[in-house]
Length: 127
Image (cartoon, rainbow, N blue to C red; front, side):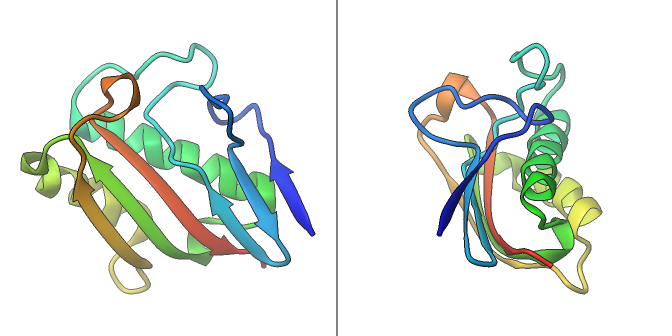
């Protein structure tokens, strides 16, 4: 049965979607923008700060579902500019590591919501 994920630890949805859903032991997150959950504004700084906030938001949604960064199977990462790929990878590696990193797609998008530099979504499983 499908269950909607809702946590105050991550930004509210800015459209007609949920922060994520679960089905059985699987967790599907919506794309997480670099919005601060309390202010709903972007964190200050560039790609490094925005990447870290997007991944913190992702972590909050995963934890609210009973999953975690360690149980992520696949991520899809959207960058507004592929020139930010190396800087994004550095933050991503800090969060996921390199030994047990999930499968990943990383693409450049013409434009992200609210003109974000990055957005990250994931598929995980509950422990």
